[in-house]
Image (tube, rainbow, N blue to C red; front, side, top):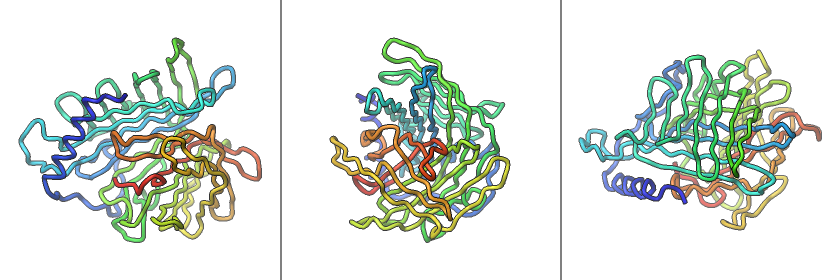
Length: 358
């Protein structure tokens, strides 16, 4: 079980926030990203996350997928509330391992109010902590993560090998037809990852490639959105492919918006218009727990190129209703083109159990 006391504190904080009335959140508008400041937290905005995913290869050739996510959420409690116990900000963290030998995710999740030494997110650079879990950026630009989780312990470093990738228009990333339906969003693809993993009484040293997304917003999705399908793929030739679609509610799940970027190593990113990006399900897996049907393999058309995803394993569903209130599928996946593997990364899907609310 996740930390029940932290969950109850978080639930009480959210209930208090709901009674507190509405507070103002800043809107997203085009502006240049500024570093290292924008590596840090943006506490005025409603929602923010640092999302690290990737593949790790064991010396014997077996592959694992990993996910480490830290969320920051600003509640509707008045920032002027003088109480030290007022949960103005919540910090949530998820960690997951995808091991085909196990067949289901090994995962853990935590939640706590920011402050009082328990949790927080620095504003000057990446440094997010929740009790003994921590994700921080070092002066040399590498990231370090310490996660003593339930069922496993993961410590890793992730070193950039390429320039930062600002998504959308210099980091202003549209998520719908309205200008305010947007986020600030950048990625760090092709990260060189070194990890120490302890589980089942043994410790392994692993290496692989990772992908980091940092995103913050106050009004991310259109009101009629159900969720999204997203891929972040490190191609074997050093390229980086990002693509997503925002799906509408209803039986047809018609796309409301779409985006893609493709960057060759050392070159500029090419971005694609919504009508140049298309997702199509290829295979569906039904969860025995939630009964949701997840399209775990998808065809992704970007401009004139057609890719497909193939999951490391089908059951990569993560039920985080105790912390974020959502169920999502976060899956290590291979990327194929013309029937051959051209990369590896992650496929993320939300809104298949219930419309997502951030």
